[in-house]
Image (tube, rainbow, N blue to C red; front, side, top):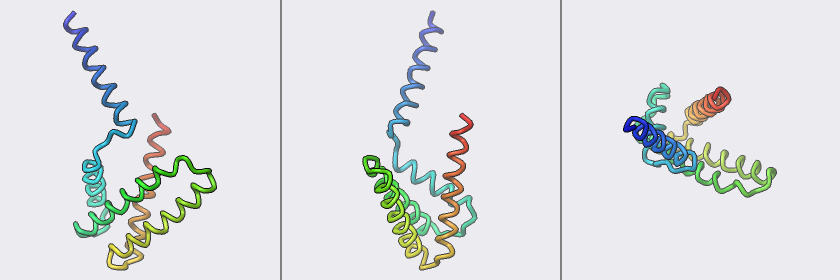
Length: 123
């Protein structure tokens, strides 16, 4: 009987944690740390300050994009293009005006996005 109760408690806690994460209950500091670690392993040769800037800019842009859910598809597309252009400009400035390096960072994030989409399709 104790094993059954323990199993129920463990499952309940597990599902509660998962559903909380799905509703957006995430820790921005953990997300930032995770993105910095991913950039470190991407062989982009960024300094710590550059990685911090890139991730901060990316997180700010993601936050702005979350606010676009109520827009029409055309408005959302237009606004996303505008934000993506701003992000590239800010990345370029943060990377000592090295546009080629900013494009490598953009390609890295695009690869990450494709992997996430592929992983979702397999679940």
